[in-house]
Image 1 (cartoon, rainbow, N blue to C red):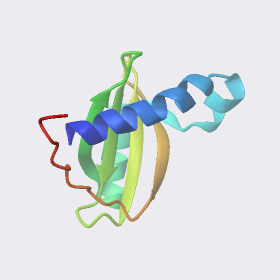
Image 2: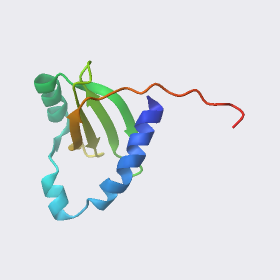
Image 3: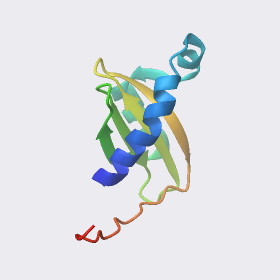
Image 4: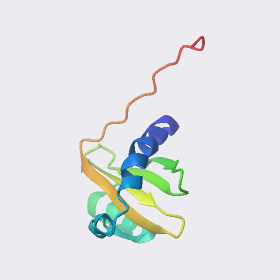
Amino acid sequence: MRSLALTLAFALAVPMSVATTAAARAETPCTERTDVVKHLDRKYAEAPVAIGLTNNGGVIEVFSTKTGGSWTILLTMPNGTACVVAAGQSWEQVPHAKRDPST
């Protein structure tokens, strides 16, 4: 799970650093993290399945249903403001590939 969270954090670091204009911020739904988490649980039955830290001090989380029917990626900043980065359907947990210790 740590590898997935790091991969997601890296993959989202560039787009999130680019999306800093006022227009981009206005389009991103942001509010208090506790409100978002309650909404995701009540409306979609989503719970955290991955978490990681971003280079700017934020926390990136992936929420999903038990069956993977829906998912949401949430970025929470140190001040507690959380922004929905992406959401969709058909989340799959990918098993960690075994690494060759000689490489």
